[in-house]
Image (cartoon, rainbow over all chains, first blue to last red; front, side, top):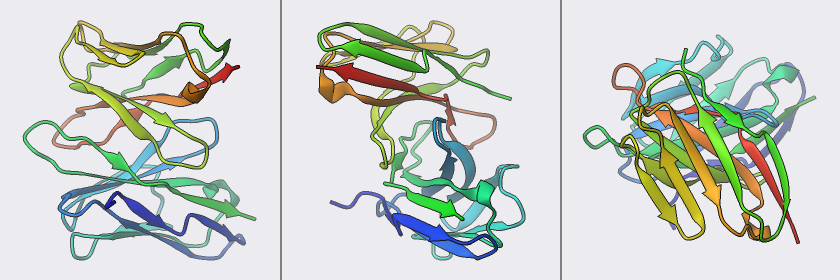
Length: 115
Length: 113
């Protein structure tokens, strides 16, 4: 199966440390999205890429967050100087934008716990 | 700001019962998706509705998109324990060319045997 994969699945870190997550989208999908989900809530949009270009960033994405998609394939999301409030599930989704419709397929997520 | 309100937030029913989950907004969406999410996993797409008044059926699940494309409902007939999970509605088609989804807060469904 060539679904969306994310690595790692779980990450525990101490406050102040940097963490990096990776997302491998479905091959040939030109769009890649990052969302964050806290317990008991729906996912919230963070940012998205079309090919290698980062086209939109949410106000939720503070200066400590940076995302890249250098070759238009996999993407990384880095959080610097983590805070306890960063603890959440980080979800990646990919889609193939055709005309006006697209369907996003989600990965299994990376659960981050900041101690 | 586009918001989606889901109700109820929690639902605990016996196997065999019927239920309806609602997703409402004051904004118009070009499409609306329903996802189901298991604990520790990512959301899995159930259906996409795009036309006002559209009704789609997926076995025991019936999805409806409101005529004005501002609301949607999910109806489950004769619920089974395997239907237990978090149900999320998500609206698409924001301003510009973005495909970002706006999610509701989810409905946690527990179906007891």
